[in-house]
Image 1 (spheres, rainbow, N blue to C red):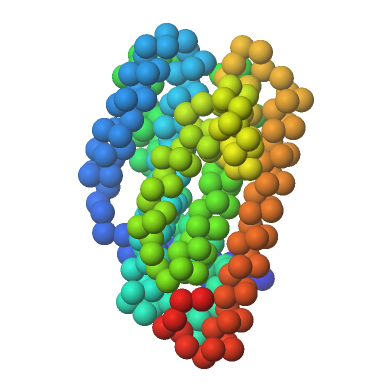
Image 2: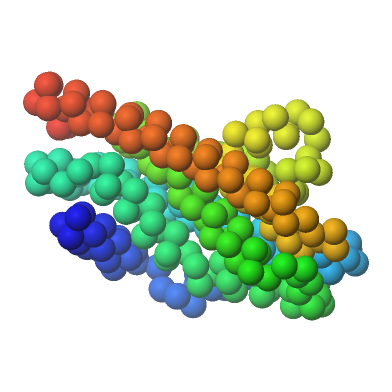
Length: 259
């Protein structure tokens, strides 16, 4: 267990140090990207809507980092051949890949908070929250849901031979299906059916209930339980895909080929 935590810690540290973008440009881009969301929040004229959109803006930043930054980092690592040494080292590949996603999420926490504050400032909104403790819990599980989906796509990037560009197009769809723009209970039926498969959408629905004036503890807990269940399912599927890929590499004996 100690070795496992050491592997996760060293991987996260390595990924954060390897990122070349300095903090000021990242914070500036965090503000620029949420201007449209901020004006929508301002036009709504409802504190609970503006608060939800501010949290959603932070989650969009985290989601984009998990898919874009994590995807390109994995693609570059495969292109440079450094993933081969990870496989040879004997470290569990699923743990390594999941740690990379955690690193990208941690790297985006500060820009995400700046995005949240920017939306509130531009919209001129004082945050409105009915249930602060459950809001914090819901936010944590929303991030974990993003990590589960990010892990799945990270595995897919390796499976298809490092073609990270394909997944860049999923960022706007993920922002909608993840519930970062509109809570699950208010989505159109067609979109809601797909969004119900995404763990973060249920956690974001809990966040909406925490900021709305009709906060329902039972509904919040139910949404969080569904989010946890879906996260476990996504993690299990990703883990099995990853282990299957490892076995194929061992059998083929060729690390240069895609799985």
